[in-house]
Amino acid sequence: MLATNDIDVALGDIRIPSDVIDVCIDEVTVIIATDVGSDVVKRRMLADKDFSMRSHKMVNDILVTSSMAQSVQSDTEFADIYNQIQLDRSDVLLNRMGLVLLHLIAEAPRFDMGISDEVFKRRIHSVSHLLH
Amino acid sequence: MTTQKPINSKLNAALQVASVAVVAQASRQNSLKEKLTEVSVAVATSMALTLAIAPSDAHAQEVNQLKRAAQNTLGALIGGGIGSQFGKGNGKTLATGIGATTGVIITEELRGDSDQRRTNNSRYDNQGFGPRDFGPSGLNNSYNIGRANTSNAVLQSGPEPLSSDRLNKLTAKEQNFLAARDQFARAKYLALQAQDDAVLSPRNRQLEEISIHAANQEAATRNTYVEARNEFVSALEYFGNRGYDVQQFAYTYNLANRQVTSKDMSKRDLDSQVSRRLMNRIETETEKVSEYARH
Image 1 (tube, rainbow over the protein chains, first blue to last red):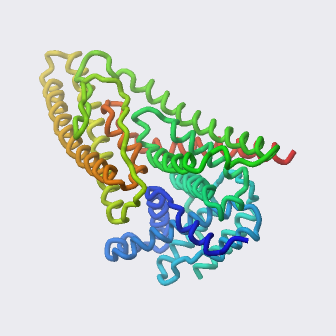
Image 2 (image 1 turned 90 degrees about the horizontal axis):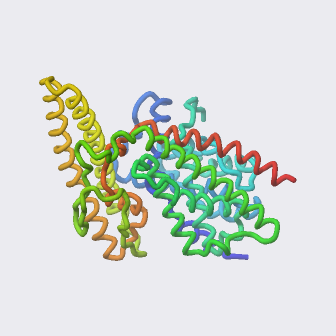
Image 3 (image 1 turned 135 degrees about the vertical axis):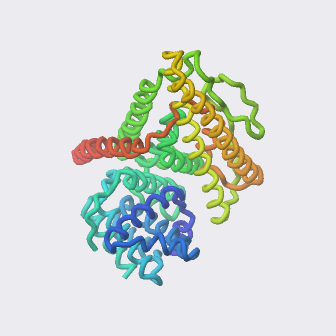
């Protein structure tokens, strides 16, 4: 049995290309603007430097988690990973962005990584609880 | 949570790249690799390898995002030892098959698109008349006009991660360079067209003036391009030589060392077209592969 600390460190070492993160943030920004009727994310990004960095980190964490959710064999093993995830819950707008992104990820077509749609969606749903 | 907006293909492509990058990196970590399915490692391996070599043409800047991410992943895979990541026995065969299938689809799509664009633009590519293609002449780079559109430039890169602030600044320079390159290619295309028109109607003063104006525009965008290119390349080489990890910019660096032609003109909707076709084919093939796996 591996120490959970090993998993935490291993997950922390995984990096998503920044342009991939930018595409996700752009898409989420557009959707939120459509939903609430204004460009709140863009304005917040301009006004708050820290927000931009935190949103990048959150999107990175979500992409890592969701990618593992579609490629980890058993629920028990995914639970080891799930228990190490800490998503930023301190900001309402960040939470909303995270939920929108998770929804998009759950609906997007994906490669068959050996995990069924049903299992994948259930895992993504459980990740979304980390934002509530 | 409800959202009625359909998921766009660019986001789909980004999510696919993210999953490849994550699986490839996770397969190098002892604490994670045992948890991954064999299929996921095979798909990630094949995708990373294929994307990294797929579109060899300069106009592949539209799929730059995919390329660059794939190159990152490729580095991770080579570092971890590709062969050791696969499964055993039948699992290995199946995983390899699935990975190869996915890889072939992506290669075909990207190359198919490249071929189509090359054919569409062939009239303006080095036909022996009109303005000659211009090539970069920045730092540490001797350039001969009229050379082949290939580059052997190797970007030095080290293991030290760049701080997010520096990474953002380098990314901004990269975006600036790509935008300037796009503008220059477009101006080049328009100048060639204007010159063609002027040649066909030699006594038409208006066309002559348009041609001169287009040539001036081309010269102006060329200067902007050279400035943006040199700024990006010199910053990248500086950090690379100092041992920082700048591998993610390798593809753009390669672009910076190629000559710019009119066919490099960006078609804004190209990336979405490529991604959409790609996703359709991957969905179809994934179904076939799943069917195969069930038997």
